[in-house]
Structures are given as structure tokens and as C-alpha cells.
Image: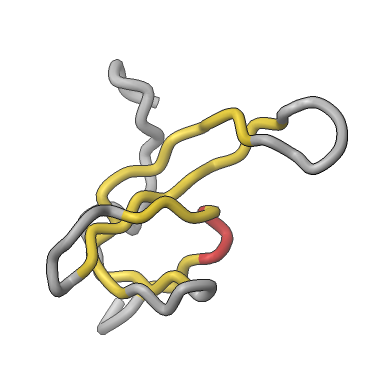
Length: 72
């Protein structure tokens, strides 16, 4: 983790796809965040922030829901 709270990840700066929304874009950041649950206390999860290829607002999604695109 760096000083601004972002986690290091090998896909940062690479093209990825969010499996849930189909959004494709650059992985900009991975952070640990408290997320609400339907029942019980909040939990901590790793969230990925993707900047869409065509522009627009970054989306947040679960880190385990992204796939790399292009050549590795």
C-alpha cells in the first residue's frame, strides 16, 4: 500500500473488463474499502477503479470481477 491508501497491483495502467457491467478501460487504482452488507456489519473489500475507454466517469467494482484485456 502506498501513502495515499492505494494498493499495488500488476494490472494498474492496463486495459481490463468488468465482468458485471461489461465496462472496458484502464485500471486506475485498487483500494481497500468498507462496503455495506445486506445483513450485519460492514466488511472490507478490495475495489478496482476503471476509467472507461470511451471516456466518462470511473466505475468501481470488486477486484475479483475484472479480467485483463489485450496481450499480456
